[in-house]
Length: 302
Image 1 (cartoon, rainbow, N blue to C red):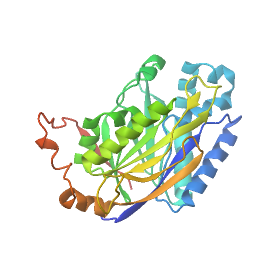
Image 2 (cartoon, rainbow, N blue to C red):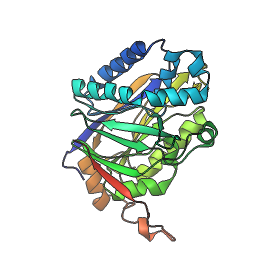
Image 3 (tube, rainbow, N blue to C red):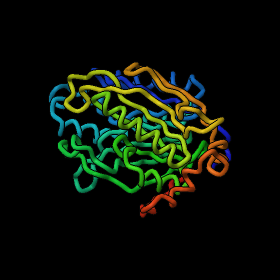
Image 4 (spheres, rainbow, N blue to C red):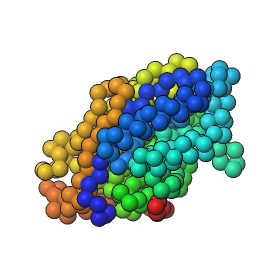
């Protein structure tokens, strides 16, 4: 566990719009980062597939065609990440960049999110478990599983559907993750609640915090992110003196806003050993409990 006592997180309920140019999109992101940093947060979290918004900048020949969208957004990934690096340096915050398609050397696409630091370091986690929709789009499973050690804490990233499965998050927690970042993109409220339930369960099982960040709003121009529903949430185990409900903060459904909370990392570390329940330590006691046979790559980000 990190020596830093607490971590202030700002999680975005990010509205998918229809920017006409990349400059307009960049101005929007810069304003969101500025406002997020103004909350005093150490870490800003953007949602899954937020990068797809950039497709609107290239006209209907790109945004009407899902394969053209995947290719174009992948092609401009480096510039998108660099913008967030520059903003992280300017505002002295860590940022989880909104995920988007990334083309591998063999030509297939994965869904990747980047964690960037104020000193310019970049770590990347690819989504591991594909939804039926992604399989239809031609987005494939990525890897490896990574845990990111930074100056403000140690993070795992479970992109949307990944949060609904316990073994990967368990492996991340055993590798030292204190906070699970869950960028999400769900069309229906039911999908939002699935990811919310997964986020809360992973926090409870592993005595860690989890942070969900959703896309919101309608973008009928896009075949990929046309409808978006959700609310940001910051979750911890339901424990006395931590949170009676397991909810540190939640936003208003489908509003465009930042949701913030202070996570007491030191207290969570103590709760693992002295809490009302010992979920993390008692994992192996459950009948048939699997030991996660997941290779986890530890990435140090300066």
